[in-house]
Length: 164
Image 1 (cartoon, one colour):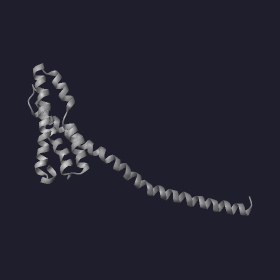
Image 2 (cartoon, rainbow, N blue to C red; image 1 turned 180 degrees about the horizontal axis):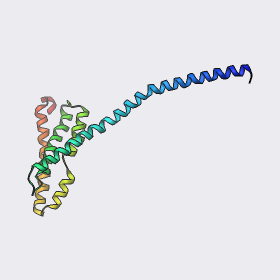
Image 3 (spheres, one colour; image 1 turned 90 degrees about the vertical axis):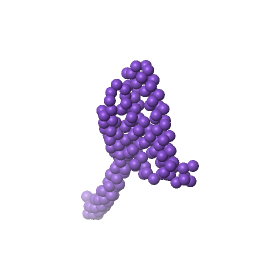
Image 4 (cartoon, helix red, strand yellow; image 1 turned 60 degrees about the vertical axis):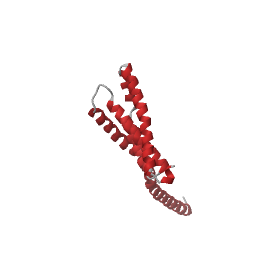
């Protein structure tokens, strides 16, 4: 190898080393961005998980606290959850004071675990025909009434011109 080739090879190696260093520096700058993007994507999942855990624990506590024979606990959580969801959804429509994160924790997380259709269906199937009809009627009638009550509460608390 000639002296000129050696010099150009050395300067070429130097240039490659500088490029590699610049790439590593750029990658280091991108790493926090990628990490923060991953955290932003993970945040809604964590919010739903925390709300879901809390809702499931509360549902279990209500079911244990109320007497057996008739699924009073499931009826209670479904009606209370319907009321709360009515408040939450109409609050978003009429007042819009709660953040999207709060709605995610409460609506998608807590209330979806607090209320339960599957337990309602299984418990209803285990009842006598007369009690099963009463349970279905109670869950649906009281659930819809609770949503309407939630809407009425939000309307009464919202600005008069918004509530119309």
